Length: 145
Image 1 (spheres, rainbow, N blue to C red):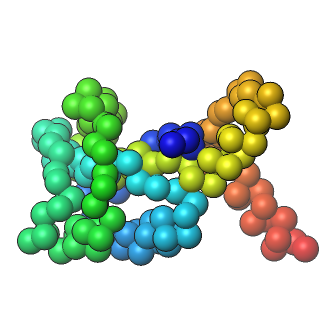
Image 2: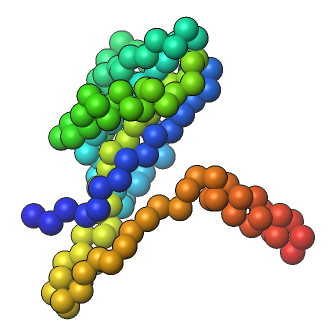
């Protein structure tokens, strides 16, 4: 079996206002075969700076109910150290959804590259701050067009 590239994304929620609404959009990219979930962890830090991770399979918590169909088959590759690192970077009174996923769209490309004798030279994600500036520039350009 060939795996696509793995990536993790941390989505923060100020004021611990996570309500689970993003589950629908996450499910769409999973159902389309664009990504496959590998691990999914929720981390929260209270106003005093105490952090803890919560299991998303807690069916009694309505914030997590919409994630339940996505939890089957997760491999749990995120380590306690990974979660501790995320928690350490969170501001007090903030929560985060940590998503480790496989880029399924890249599997065929990876196989084709290998068959052609190709190899990956570099891969990097553009920083969120740069993406935010770029999005603002594009929105401003659309308004003036």
